[in-house]
Image (cartoon, rainbow, N blue to C red; front, top):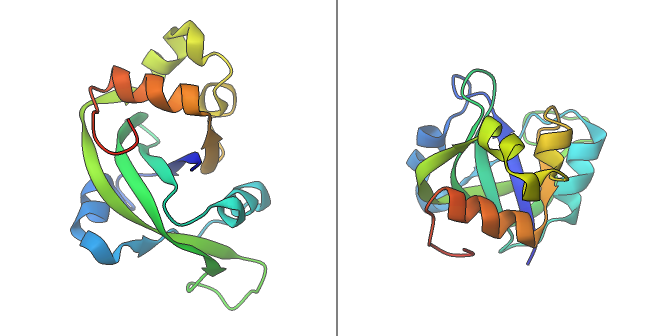
Length: 142
């Protein structure tokens, strides 16, 4: 299993929107960055990810699971773009902010800390466990 972080503007698609999709999940469509797309191509069903609110909130809201592998993005006819489908697993009892991640020396090399702009990014197992601990998350993958 691998770990990831999915960033979204909460006023466009937020944690509550993802939760509302239930077990059917939602394609993580609209990504138009090659590195982010390539990250989704590397994902496998069952991989876990953090759902991150960007822009003003800048915080990890909860955990999602990849439920379908990369497939053509349904929002475009351009064959270059693909996306995975994800579903919400559980919220963080306490969202973890970007500032908290930056203040934690053990997260100094985390992709989120070093490059806050990429919308889909890898998370190491050690980073995953630490952020879960910081957020009080004890569910699947913690």
